[in-house]
Length: 67
Ligand SMILES: N[C@@H](CCC(=O)N[C@@H](CS)C(=O)NCC(=O)O)C(=O)O
Image 1: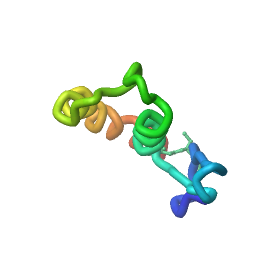
Image 2: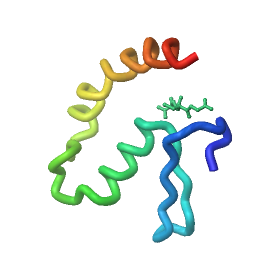
Image 3: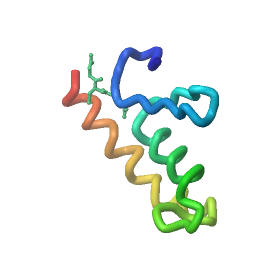
């Protein structure tokens, strides 16, 4: 399901078996599809981008430790 052969992977059976991988991508997908009241993500792309930005840099050391 994941071309990188890693977990996590989410398969949405209600969306034609759509497979989503990469933690950030999964979280964003679940938020946008299921968090209709914006409890877990922003209704405003600028605010969301500002919140997510530091976590992109946080992923770098996490990947290094995984190797
Ligand atoms: N950047 C990926 C990292 C995925 C990843 O490295 N997953 C590890 C577990 S935390 C894995 O699948 N390891 C098994 C392997 O490398 O064979 C993400 O955020 O989902």
